[in-house]
Length: 121
Image 1 (cartoon, helix red, strand yellow):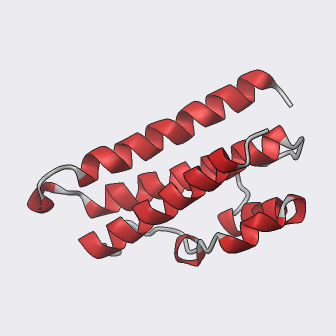
Image 2 (cartoon, one colour):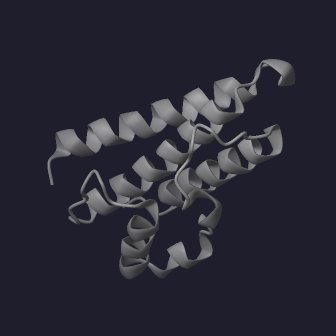
C-alpha cells in the first residue's frame, strides 16, 4: 500500500477526531451534536482504514464501517473487544442527536484510536 495514502488517511482520522473533540469543548448549548457524531464516525472509520492499509488490505471508499471492523477482526482478534454497533447505522441529517449520543460517539472514536495506537507495529 502507498505510504502516502496511509499518511493521508491517518491525517484525516486525526482531523475528524480533533473536530469532534473541539466541538465537545464548547458550552453545551453551542455544541452541534450532529457534527460531533459525524466527525467521530469518520475518525473511527479512518483509524480502522489505516490499520487495514498497514496490513495490506485494500479498502474501498464505499465500504461500510461494519465490514471494515470485520476485516480488522480477521487480522487481529483484539478487535472483538471493540463494540462500534452504535456507529454501524448511517447518520441521517434529519435525525436529532442529543449531547449524550454525541458523547457516546466520541467515546467510541477514542476507543478506536487508542486500540489502533496500542497495536501499532
